[in-house]
Amino acid sequence: GGLALPQSSRLRGWTGRLLLQVLLCGWVWGSELTFELPDNAKQCFYEDITIGTKCTLEFQVVTGGHYDVDCRLEDPDGTVLYKEMKKQYDSFTFTAAKNGTYKFCFSNEFSTFTHKTVYFDFQVGEDPPLFPNENRVTALTQMESACVSIHEALKSVIDYQTHFRLREAQGRSRAEDLNTRVAFWSIGEAFILLVVSISQVVLLRSFFSDKKTTTTRVGS
Image 1 (tube, rainbow, N blue to C red):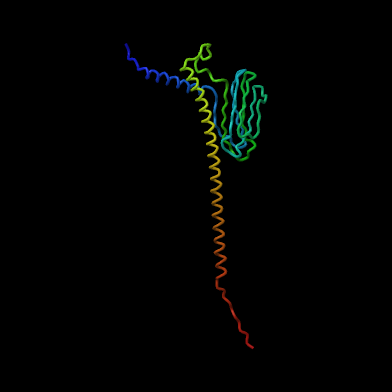
Image 2: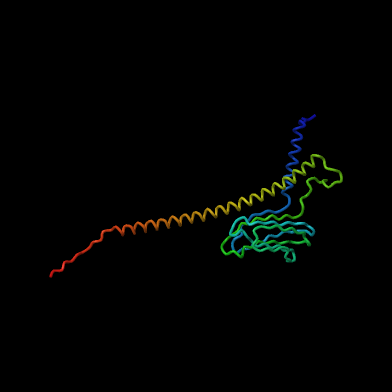
């Protein structure tokens, strides 16, 4: 017969394939994007959704100004489902009431000179089952149950990683902005100190400079 792999090798290979399937399934649904939103600008996105689909829109302003943006979500008929002004971050969940193209827009039109960096995650529908027969009547095997648990844990890890990456980017932006302000303040202080020092030197020299005096004798 053919070459038979040891039991541990077969188990590692099977586990590796299952983990690969878990990782791939985690990226099937949802759209994530980080984009630049200039000042006085508006950016819209469109998504085709079928009726009865549960959707979640989550966004956060990463950098720029006061870290706020306007957000608006409309159904195919133009009915406003969600509208918030100058929000730093938010999350909105809804169920599509009709088929068609849904539109959500981010606006920075209230800002005159500050551009923003915006992140959003638009989840459409539920994740597909990890196994085709996951919803069967019989119970899952121990290996399948472990894979489902790993799949859920990995989704949580991805969410936490995204959250902390956004916080890190926002913190770095604040630190760079603070560093720029401190640098300009230090330059201004150095310039003022230089001007004051020169003024003091000139003033002291004027006190100790010799003044030539002239005397005139008047004879009788």
